[in-house]
Image (cartoon, rainbow, N blue to C red; front, side):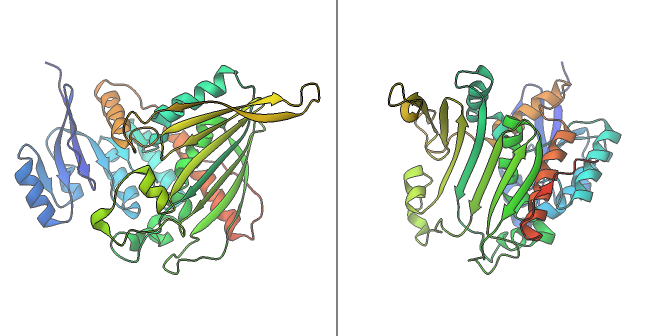
Length: 362
Protein backbone atom coordinates (compact mmCIF):
# COMPACT_ATOMS: atom_id res chain seq x y z
CA UNK A 1 0.00 0.00 0.00
CA UNK A 2 1.32 3.44 -0.96
CA UNK A 3 2.17 5.68 1.99
CA UNK A 4 -0.32 8.52 2.33
CA UNK A 5 0.89 12.13 2.55
CA UNK A 6 0.09 13.43 6.03
CA UNK A 7 -1.04 17.06 6.16
CA UNK A 8 -1.28 19.69 8.88
CA UNK A 9 -3.23 22.95 8.55
CA UNK A 10 -3.03 26.29 10.37
CA UNK A 11 -5.51 29.15 10.24
CA UNK A 12 -8.44 28.15 8.04
CA UNK A 13 -9.70 24.71 8.98
CA UNK A 14 -9.26 22.13 6.23
CA UNK A 15 -9.87 18.40 6.32
CA UNK A 16 -8.64 17.14 2.95
CA UNK A 17 -8.83 13.37 2.61
CA UNK A 18 -7.99 11.22 -0.41
CA UNK A 19 -6.56 7.87 -1.48
CA UNK A 20 -2.97 9.11 -1.16
CA UNK A 21 -3.26 11.96 1.37
CA UNK A 22 -4.89 12.69 4.73
CA UNK A 23 -5.18 15.72 7.01
CA UNK A 24 -4.06 14.65 10.46
CA UNK A 25 -3.40 17.89 12.37
CA UNK A 26 -4.77 21.40 12.80
CA UNK A 27 -3.34 24.45 14.59
CA UNK A 28 -5.12 27.50 16.00
CA UNK A 29 -4.67 29.82 18.97
CA UNK A 30 -8.40 29.76 19.83
CA UNK A 31 -8.76 27.10 22.54
CA UNK A 32 -12.54 26.91 22.29
CA UNK A 33 -12.37 26.42 18.53
CA UNK A 34 -9.79 23.65 18.97
CA UNK A 35 -11.97 21.92 21.55
CA UNK A 36 -15.01 21.99 19.25
CA UNK A 37 -13.09 20.87 16.14
CA UNK A 38 -11.35 18.13 18.11
CA UNK A 39 -14.71 16.71 19.16
CA UNK A 40 -16.04 16.88 15.60
CA UNK A 41 -12.89 15.41 13.98
CA UNK A 42 -11.38 12.87 16.40
CA UNK A 43 -9.01 11.57 13.69
CA UNK A 44 -7.15 14.90 13.80
CA UNK A 45 -4.72 16.13 16.45
CA UNK A 46 -5.31 19.72 17.61
CA UNK A 47 -2.39 22.06 18.33
CA UNK A 48 -2.14 25.59 19.73
CA UNK A 49 1.54 25.94 18.76
CA UNK A 50 2.61 25.79 15.11
CA UNK A 51 6.12 24.50 15.80
CA UNK A 52 4.67 21.72 17.95
CA UNK A 53 2.42 20.73 15.07
CA UNK A 54 5.49 20.44 12.84
CA UNK A 55 6.66 17.64 15.15
CA UNK A 56 3.53 15.57 14.47
CA UNK A 57 4.62 12.05 13.47
CA UNK A 58 5.05 11.62 9.73
CA UNK A 59 3.82 15.09 8.78
CA UNK A 60 4.79 15.79 5.16
CA UNK A 61 2.95 18.97 4.16
CA UNK A 62 1.34 22.01 5.76
CA UNK A 63 -1.42 24.39 4.66
CA UNK A 64 -0.74 27.89 6.05
CA UNK A 65 -3.59 30.42 6.00
CA UNK A 66 -2.70 32.51 9.02
CA UNK A 67 -2.42 36.35 9.07
CA UNK A 68 0.14 37.75 6.67
CA UNK A 69 2.70 38.77 9.29
CA UNK A 70 3.04 35.12 10.35
CA UNK A 71 3.60 33.66 6.88
CA UNK A 72 7.38 33.97 6.61
CA UNK A 73 8.20 32.54 10.02
CA UNK A 74 5.84 29.60 9.63
CA UNK A 75 6.64 28.82 5.98
CA UNK A 76 10.41 28.85 6.61
CA UNK A 77 10.04 26.69 9.72
CA UNK A 78 7.97 24.14 7.79
CA UNK A 79 10.35 24.05 4.81
CA UNK A 80 13.37 23.70 7.11
CA UNK A 81 11.54 20.81 8.79
CA UNK A 82 11.36 19.08 5.40
CA UNK A 83 7.71 19.70 4.54
CA UNK A 84 5.84 20.85 1.45
CA UNK A 85 4.11 24.21 1.96
CA UNK A 86 0.86 25.58 0.56
CA UNK A 87 0.82 29.25 1.60
CA UNK A 88 -1.92 31.85 1.49
CA UNK A 89 -0.95 35.03 -0.32
CA UNK A 90 1.22 36.99 0.13
CA UNK A 91 4.39 35.03 0.82
CA UNK A 92 5.53 37.66 3.32
CA UNK A 93 4.92 41.29 4.15
CA UNK A 94 8.06 42.67 2.46
CA UNK A 95 10.64 41.72 -0.16
CA UNK A 96 13.12 40.40 2.40
CA UNK A 97 10.60 37.92 3.79
CA UNK A 98 9.57 36.78 0.30
CA UNK A 99 13.17 36.18 -0.75
CA UNK A 100 13.87 34.32 2.51
CA UNK A 101 10.98 31.93 1.81
CA UNK A 102 12.21 31.25 -1.74
CA UNK A 103 15.69 30.58 -0.34
CA UNK A 104 14.25 28.18 2.26
CA UNK A 105 12.43 26.29 -0.49
CA UNK A 106 15.65 25.97 -2.48
CA UNK A 107 17.44 24.60 0.60
CA UNK A 108 14.69 22.13 1.39
CA UNK A 109 13.96 20.96 -2.15
CA UNK A 110 10.29 20.67 -1.20
CA UNK A 111 7.24 21.98 -3.02
CA UNK A 112 6.07 25.51 -2.28
CA UNK A 113 3.18 27.37 -3.81
CA UNK A 114 1.12 30.44 -2.99
CA UNK A 115 -2.64 30.53 -3.33
CA UNK A 116 -3.04 32.28 -6.69
CA UNK A 117 -6.17 30.30 -7.44
CA UNK A 118 -7.25 32.43 -10.41
CA UNK A 119 -4.62 30.61 -12.52
CA UNK A 120 -6.40 27.31 -11.88
CA UNK A 121 -9.95 28.31 -12.83
CA UNK A 122 -12.36 27.80 -15.74
CA UNK A 123 -12.12 31.56 -16.30
CA UNK A 124 -8.34 31.45 -16.80
CA UNK A 125 -8.45 28.37 -19.01
CA UNK A 126 -11.03 29.94 -21.31
CA UNK A 127 -9.20 33.26 -21.60
CA UNK A 128 -5.96 31.39 -22.35
CA UNK A 129 -7.74 29.66 -25.23
CA UNK A 130 -8.72 33.04 -26.70
CA UNK A 131 -5.17 34.37 -26.33
CA UNK A 132 -3.35 31.33 -27.70
CA UNK A 133 -5.92 30.29 -30.33
CA UNK A 134 -5.53 33.42 -32.44
CA UNK A 135 -9.24 33.64 -33.27
CA UNK A 136 -9.41 37.32 -32.29
CA UNK A 137 -5.88 38.32 -33.20
CA UNK A 138 -3.26 39.69 -30.85
CA UNK A 139 -4.05 40.66 -27.26
CA UNK A 140 -3.71 44.44 -26.83
CA UNK A 141 -5.00 45.40 -23.36
CA UNK A 142 -6.27 43.93 -20.09
CA UNK A 143 -8.49 45.87 -17.68
CA UNK A 144 -9.56 44.89 -14.17
CA UNK A 145 -12.19 46.83 -12.20
CA UNK A 146 -13.28 45.97 -8.65
CA UNK A 147 -15.59 47.77 -6.22
CA UNK A 148 -15.57 45.89 -2.93
CA UNK A 149 -16.36 46.38 0.74
CA UNK A 150 -13.88 47.85 3.18
CA UNK A 151 -12.22 46.15 6.13
CA UNK A 152 -13.58 47.29 9.47
CA UNK A 153 -11.76 48.49 12.57
CA UNK A 154 -12.52 45.23 14.34
CA UNK A 155 -11.41 41.60 14.32
CA UNK A 156 -8.97 40.69 11.58
CA UNK A 157 -9.78 43.94 9.81
CA UNK A 158 -7.41 45.69 12.19
CA UNK A 159 -4.26 43.85 11.05
CA UNK A 160 -5.38 43.89 7.42
CA UNK A 161 -5.30 47.70 7.22
CA UNK A 162 -1.84 48.02 8.85
CA UNK A 163 0.95 47.74 6.25
CA UNK A 164 3.44 46.52 8.86
CA UNK A 165 1.10 43.56 9.51
CA UNK A 166 -0.43 42.92 6.10
CA UNK A 167 2.19 44.17 3.63
CA UNK A 168 0.00 46.93 2.19
CA UNK A 169 -2.86 47.25 -0.26
CA UNK A 170 -1.27 45.39 -3.15
CA UNK A 171 -0.23 42.40 -1.05
CA UNK A 172 -3.70 42.28 0.48
CA UNK A 173 -5.82 42.30 -2.66
CA UNK A 174 -4.64 43.29 -6.19
CA UNK A 175 -1.80 40.77 -5.97
CA UNK A 176 -4.26 38.23 -7.42
CA UNK A 177 -4.85 40.42 -10.45
CA UNK A 178 -1.15 41.14 -10.92
CA UNK A 179 -0.50 37.41 -10.96
CA UNK A 180 -3.26 36.58 -13.44
CA UNK A 181 -2.15 39.49 -15.67
CA UNK A 182 1.34 37.95 -15.73
CA UNK A 183 -0.17 34.54 -16.47
CA UNK A 184 -1.95 35.98 -19.52
CA UNK A 185 0.52 38.57 -20.81
CA UNK A 186 4.00 37.70 -19.49
CA UNK A 187 6.50 39.90 -17.72
CA UNK A 188 5.83 43.49 -16.69
CA UNK A 189 8.41 46.16 -17.61
CA UNK A 190 7.10 49.12 -15.63
CA UNK A 191 4.15 50.25 -13.55
CA UNK A 192 2.60 53.58 -12.65
CA UNK A 193 0.06 53.99 -9.84
CA UNK A 194 -2.27 56.81 -8.84
CA UNK A 195 -4.41 56.97 -5.71
CA UNK A 196 -7.14 59.30 -4.56
CA UNK A 197 -7.63 60.67 -1.04
CA UNK A 198 -8.94 57.99 1.31
CA UNK A 199 -12.59 57.78 2.28
CA UNK A 200 -12.03 55.18 5.01
CA UNK A 201 -10.08 56.66 7.95
CA UNK A 202 -9.21 53.27 9.49
CA UNK A 203 -6.97 52.45 6.53
CA UNK A 204 -3.27 53.02 7.18
CA UNK A 205 -2.65 52.69 3.44
CA UNK A 206 -4.66 53.72 0.38
CA UNK A 207 -8.25 52.46 0.18
CA UNK A 208 -8.15 52.84 -3.62
CA UNK A 209 -5.56 52.43 -6.33
CA UNK A 210 -5.30 52.61 -10.11
CA UNK A 211 -2.19 51.07 -11.67
CA UNK A 212 -1.10 50.90 -15.29
CA UNK A 213 1.21 48.07 -16.30
CA UNK A 214 3.38 47.86 -19.43
CA UNK A 215 4.37 44.36 -20.52
CA UNK A 216 7.49 43.37 -22.41
CA UNK A 217 5.40 42.12 -25.36
CA UNK A 218 3.62 45.46 -25.81
CA UNK A 219 0.38 44.58 -24.00
CA UNK A 220 -0.91 47.27 -21.62
CA UNK A 221 -2.84 46.59 -18.43
CA UNK A 222 -4.89 48.56 -15.92
CA UNK A 223 -5.96 47.55 -12.41
CA UNK A 224 -8.50 49.67 -10.54
CA UNK A 225 -9.79 48.73 -7.12
CA UNK A 226 -11.60 50.69 -4.43
CA UNK A 227 -12.96 49.67 -1.01
CA UNK A 228 -15.29 52.60 -0.38
CA UNK A 229 -18.37 51.82 -2.48
CA UNK A 230 -19.56 48.26 -1.81
CA UNK A 231 -21.78 48.45 1.28
CA UNK A 232 -21.48 46.27 4.37
CA UNK A 233 -24.83 44.66 5.26
CA UNK A 234 -26.42 46.11 8.38
CA UNK A 235 -29.11 43.43 8.24
CA UNK A 236 -26.84 40.38 8.42
CA UNK A 237 -29.78 38.01 8.92
CA UNK A 238 -30.86 38.62 5.33
CA UNK A 239 -27.40 38.81 3.75
CA UNK A 240 -27.10 36.61 0.67
CA UNK A 241 -24.01 35.51 -1.22
CA UNK A 242 -25.52 36.01 -4.69
CA UNK A 243 -24.43 38.22 -7.58
CA UNK A 244 -27.77 40.04 -7.60
CA UNK A 245 -27.53 40.88 -3.91
CA UNK A 246 -23.86 41.86 -4.09
CA UNK A 247 -24.44 44.10 -7.08
CA UNK A 248 -27.30 45.76 -5.23
CA UNK A 249 -24.84 46.56 -2.44
CA UNK A 250 -22.42 48.16 -4.92
CA UNK A 251 -20.03 45.21 -5.34
CA UNK A 252 -18.74 44.38 -8.81
CA UNK A 253 -15.71 42.64 -10.28
CA UNK A 254 -14.89 42.34 -13.97
CA UNK A 255 -12.08 42.04 -16.51
CA UNK A 256 -11.95 43.09 -20.15
CA UNK A 257 -9.50 41.74 -22.73
CA UNK A 258 -9.13 43.84 -25.87
CA UNK A 259 -7.92 41.98 -28.96
CA UNK A 260 -7.31 43.17 -32.52
CA UNK A 261 -10.69 41.84 -33.67
CA UNK A 262 -12.77 41.45 -30.51
CA UNK A 263 -13.20 42.26 -26.85
CA UNK A 264 -13.82 39.60 -24.22
CA UNK A 265 -15.36 40.56 -20.90
CA UNK A 266 -15.44 38.38 -17.79
CA UNK A 267 -18.15 39.15 -15.22
CA UNK A 268 -16.77 37.43 -12.13
CA UNK A 269 -19.89 37.73 -9.97
CA UNK A 270 -22.20 36.37 -12.67
CA UNK A 271 -19.70 33.72 -13.86
CA UNK A 272 -20.14 34.77 -17.47
CA UNK A 273 -17.88 35.64 -20.41
CA UNK A 274 -19.16 38.17 -22.96
CA UNK A 275 -17.62 38.07 -26.45
CA UNK A 276 -18.04 41.16 -28.63
CA UNK A 277 -16.56 41.31 -32.13
CA UNK A 278 -15.34 44.22 -34.22
CA UNK A 279 -16.86 44.45 -37.70
CA UNK A 280 -16.28 46.97 -40.43
CA UNK A 281 -18.97 49.65 -40.40
CA UNK A 282 -20.10 51.26 -42.56
CA UNK A 283 -18.97 48.63 -45.03
CA UNK A 284 -16.07 49.92 -47.09
CA UNK A 285 -15.30 52.79 -44.71
CA UNK A 286 -12.38 51.17 -42.89
CA UNK A 287 -14.05 51.98 -39.57
CA UNK A 288 -15.42 49.45 -37.06
CA UNK A 289 -18.30 48.97 -34.71
CA UNK A 290 -18.62 46.60 -31.76
CA UNK A 291 -21.32 43.92 -32.03
CA UNK A 292 -22.17 41.20 -29.57
CA UNK A 293 -21.22 37.71 -30.65
CA UNK A 294 -22.28 35.53 -27.71
CA UNK A 295 -22.33 35.04 -23.95
CA UNK A 296 -20.78 31.95 -22.36
CA UNK A 297 -22.39 31.01 -19.04
CA UNK A 298 -20.18 29.26 -16.46
CA UNK A 299 -22.54 29.61 -13.51
CA UNK A 300 -23.91 26.05 -13.70
CA UNK A 301 -26.71 27.08 -11.37
CA UNK A 302 -24.36 28.61 -8.79
CA UNK A 303 -24.03 32.34 -8.18
CA UNK A 304 -20.50 32.08 -6.79
CA UNK A 305 -18.99 28.82 -7.95
CA UNK A 306 -15.52 27.95 -9.10
CA UNK A 307 -15.46 30.31 -12.09
CA UNK A 308 -12.43 32.29 -10.88
CA UNK A 309 -12.06 31.72 -7.14
CA UNK A 310 -11.82 28.09 -6.06
CA UNK A 311 -9.16 27.85 -3.37
CA UNK A 312 -10.08 24.27 -2.51
CA UNK A 313 -9.50 23.05 -6.07
CA UNK A 314 -6.06 24.65 -6.20
CA UNK A 315 -5.12 23.34 -2.76
CA UNK A 316 -6.14 19.81 -3.70
CA UNK A 317 -4.16 20.01 -6.94
CA UNK A 318 -1.11 21.03 -4.91
CA UNK A 319 -1.63 18.17 -2.43
CA UNK A 320 -2.07 15.58 -5.19
CA UNK A 321 1.12 16.76 -6.86
CA UNK A 322 3.03 16.51 -3.59
CA UNK A 323 1.63 13.05 -2.93
CA UNK A 324 2.58 11.96 -6.45
CA UNK A 325 6.10 13.38 -6.35
CA UNK A 326 5.39 16.11 -8.89
CA UNK A 327 6.22 19.82 -8.81
CA UNK A 328 3.50 22.48 -8.36
CA UNK A 329 2.10 24.28 -11.37
CA UNK A 330 3.77 27.61 -10.45
CA UNK A 331 7.44 27.82 -9.51
CA UNK A 332 8.53 29.78 -6.39
CA UNK A 333 10.62 32.23 -8.40
CA UNK A 334 7.65 33.00 -10.64
CA UNK A 335 5.58 33.65 -7.51
CA UNK A 336 8.30 36.00 -6.27
CA UNK A 337 8.06 38.00 -9.50
CA UNK A 338 4.37 38.68 -8.89
CA UNK A 339 5.29 40.09 -5.48
CA UNK A 340 8.02 42.24 -7.04
CA UNK A 341 5.52 43.80 -9.47
CA UNK A 342 3.23 44.59 -6.52
CA UNK A 343 6.06 46.25 -4.62
CA UNK A 344 6.86 48.41 -7.67
CA UNK A 345 3.19 49.45 -7.89
CA UNK A 346 3.18 50.43 -4.20
CA UNK A 347 6.43 52.35 -4.70
CA UNK A 348 4.92 54.32 -7.59
CA UNK A 349 1.92 55.33 -5.44
CA UNK A 350 4.23 56.50 -2.64
CA UNK A 351 6.59 58.43 -4.91
CA UNK A 352 4.24 60.96 -6.45
CA UNK A 353 2.86 58.51 -9.04
CA UNK A 354 6.10 58.22 -10.98
CA UNK A 355 6.75 55.37 -13.41
CA UNK A 356 8.74 52.56 -11.73
CA UNK A 357 10.65 49.86 -13.58
CA UNK A 358 10.11 46.41 -12.04
CA UNK A 359 13.23 45.05 -10.32
CA UNK A 360 13.29 41.26 -10.68
CA UNK A 361 16.66 40.74 -9.02
CA UNK A 362 16.75 37.89 -6.50
